[in-house]
Image (tube, rainbow, N blue to C red; front, side):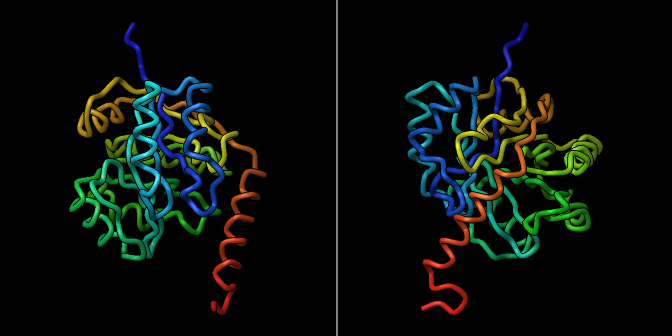
Length: 228
């Protein structure tokens, strides 16, 4: 029987302003959960990526470099970009920037009705021909039906299907993942996702609280509403 890799493809380190995952501890928790692959997808930064790739190499875990980018119409994830992606552009401009950086384009939590950062249905269908991957299961998405609809669309459109915990602190790591064939490069990764098997999982609602607190603290540090 072919060995499949267990991959959590949406993880945040403490380089994200709303996350509490120390880079040096993520690998430990990934090993504990039996993960073979993780993707580092911090918000609008790749500051911790090189460090995490090195930690993974030293411990036998494949670490995919990535970034979760804020656009004017929601968030996108770039896997394997060769440089950070500018935030605040339109969806199409961000897609172009990811292509320029030679990355793969994924849409995280696309239909999550409670997230302002979700692209939602109209935007997803507008860009569907331009993207490579749809995140079909996000453990932080409250309504299972939102994930299920994303899965249905990805299968209909024959897109790569990713899944992940969207972990912002260690307890969440490995909550949801995808089982994929081993790969050796970016193209192999995408091909594996087209034939992957999603393993759904759900994080409790309270995981959003510390992230919201962290965002608020960061906001106040920068001078609150009026700045300094």
